[in-house]
Length: 161
Image (tube, rainbow, N blue to C red; front, side):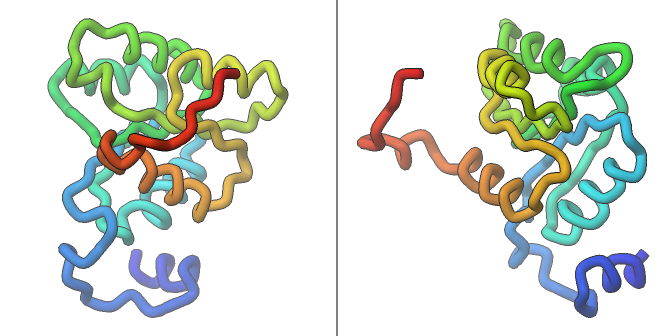
């Protein structure tokens, strides 16, 4: 696996102190029905940065994982998936009576880029909406913003849409 990572990352993977990685101690639930893309997100982008990753292929399995008690720091989900799509998953999470689940920030990562789709993503309660193919730097920027404490946002301008 390290040879694949070395090729994809373009650098040698060395022994690194896990605590020095940006994702150290943070858990991510990735929901994506495309196996190669799921592997790219988890194995190439998240795990080498120290994130603990749980992955699921559809919204229903992700929801069951949350109900079993897994509490990720963030969820990255596709929109179009079998069984339960991303919009249904986000609405279920945001309408949950369980505050532990309800407060998890969600990034929608999807191939749908029409204005109506983006609006539906925001309307369902997503923290951010990224379209595929995505730029990993944008993903990490949104993730870092989602991890900022609420008091860091005090005094920032709020815009009505």
